[in-house]
Image (cartoon, rainbow, N blue to C red; front, side, top):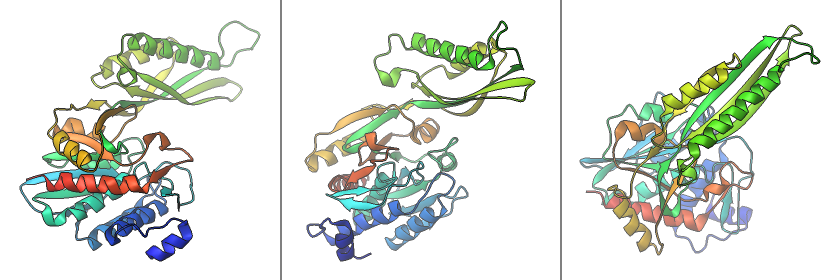
Length: 368
């Protein structure tokens, strides 16, 4: 789509943008317009590979189905790890009042497009090898794409593509533990003594909440607390037996004794003769302000007129996958308001997207 067509259809003028900025906006719009639910990312991956190749990237193969491109040369290797998959929810792609709407605009195609555009913009000044990854499966259990990338030799630096805001760096994410609780018992008359299987499951859930509350006492803030979510609760019966199933998500603070917590959860389930199955586990991860990645970002944000800040997030990202393995300087960066993640109002301010590109291009050009 030409810039003039984009003006007409979106009702937002691009006349103040340079040709490069218009191309970068078009890259983001086209990427957001391609649906890419977890495990259904192939069309978006094909598009992104083509877009990177057109900008001079060498495209690398990926058995997991990631979009991987490299640009620049030098002794240092910097991996820009974003993700291309999204959660469900169709949002008509449009530009209104300088904002691009669409599923994935914030989480996390905005940061991913920023990676491609910034590496391209910095190409002539690069003294390092930059690898951009559009990973599949980040929104699904097991993070298939990042799990493959974690088998690479550790880079010198890694930047995770998540919405920190153009003027902020994210230094940590809580981990995630996904559990299935299953309880089963013979049918009983509702007028008789004892608990129904639904009541047994509720008793377990309440005990788990109490356990988390006790462990959270004295925590400095939400990032250092265990978070619980009951994702689904189902009961069923065939007339002879009855069963209850709970799908549970647990957010894990960095440094938590996860085996100890899991052992305690199994003890709580055992009191109702229930079982626990672990669907997925990513432990929490946090880096520090002393990271070698921090100074170039501080300079880049200030050069763009911003006042840099630091954040930690209550959710999980691919930092949790590669950080503990690579142990290299790492941080998360990208434009967008993370409070809009997964919501029907997901949209990104295009001026902030362009600012993030300029910040990151300065950062990449600073590596020698």
